[in-house]
Image (cartoon, rainbow, N blue to C red; front, side, top):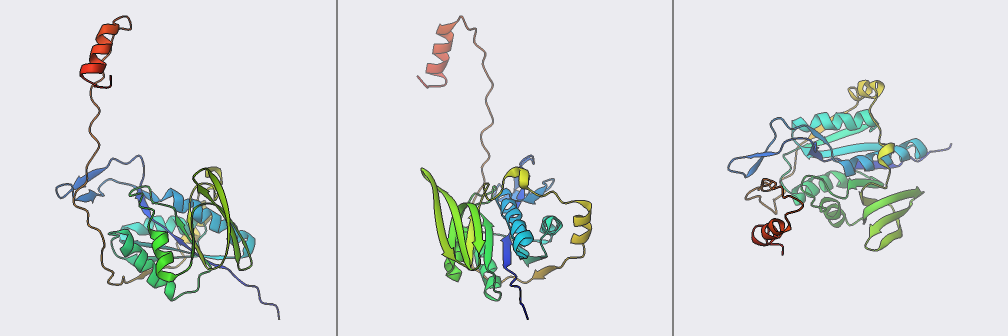
Amino acid sequence: MLYLYCMKILVCISCVPDTTSKINFTSNNTDFDTNGVQFVINPNDEFGLTRAMWFKEKNNASIDVINVGEQSNETVLRKALAIGADRAIRIDSKAIDSYQVAKNISNFIKEKSYDLIIAGRESIDYNGSMVPGMISEILNINFITNCVSLEINGSNATAKREMEGGIETLTCELPLIIGGQKGLVEESDLKIPNMRGIMQARQKPLDVIAPDQSEFKTKTHKFYKPEEKKEIKMVDPNNLDKLIDLLHNEAKVI
């Protein structure tokens, strides 16, 4: 009898504010105000999910997606299911810091046998770039970040990653976790859920599991917004003395 091996892939999903959303803070600028904010799949995670779909179509892989977050994040997880993931898992806890997120995901992975774990290089809200590396350390599995290319042949992986001055090619054995980014696929390759995918997503499992009691390593004391742009002063192109005076005495750049 012939047995076909099915590669198991886990894609870590962060829910981040859409870049067109207006950002505000509450509680004396110590907490993010989610009112009126539309959340989307973190772009680096979406590149990874699309690459996972490529492995599903080529290698008959199965895809789980996982998120640490509250119930409101399920809309984003349903989109991942509509794109083509087979199962979603939400760890029912507000994401406080990178260690807490990594620890909860790692504890879930310990009970499974994933061949490949795909996370975004960083999320576009906090740009921490820490979660996939922490998962690698906790689970003692291979890790490649800034990944722009990934091929799997049996139990071996060949990846390319961006580094200062060029591209580095690496090989390693599975299991592997990567920090993916644009280059794994191009923006033109991103999958938009169609009506069939949206309908199927409603029937796919979305499991909610209790979080562990991971401690937090960081605490947010205060958020700050960029200073508002100052009024633009127009200077007659023939009045160079006025321009020099403003650059010297107000802008203080000369």
